Amino acid sequence: MKSKTSNTQGHPCFECEGGILLPVREPFTTHTSEGLEITIPEMPMERCNVCGDTVLSGEATAYVNDYLDRAVSRLSREELQSFLDQYQLTQREAEQILGLGEKMIGRWLKGPFQVSASISNYIRVLMADPGAFEILKARKWAADRTKIAS
Ligand SMILES: [Zn+2]
Image (cartoon, rainbow, N blue to C red; front, top):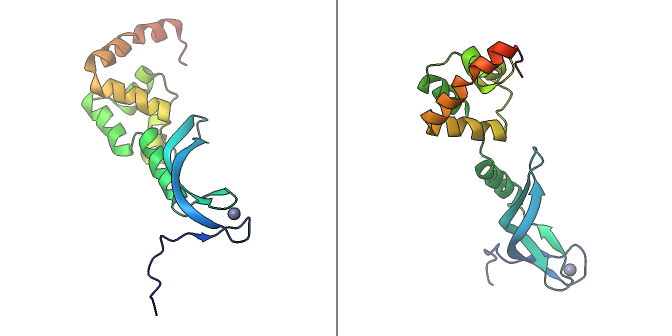
């Protein structure tokens, strides 16, 4: 009697009689919570060898979440804090320089709010390039003069 140790064998198809769902990896397009369209190049899916019906495999959700985390990778709280440390900014100063609403930084540092993907990119550029930070910071006079803090 042979033991059934292999779970790489396909499961029976839900759609047809007799078909077997076999693992395939194919491009799959989805949307992030910011509405960004993202195509995952090698999505784990299963396709029926008889009717061609395709389903996402059991590991798909974890795979998508990992992929999205890497693709839109948001700034962690530690990274946000190291941005403040790098330029020796108070939270309020950082909000003024970045053009953020009051208390935004505090909300991100304490949670539960998460820095958006676009602000994450923005802050990463500023961390990587002190010259870019100085350019942005020097623009502060414009906000002071017009009293428009948007
Ligand atoms: Zn089928």
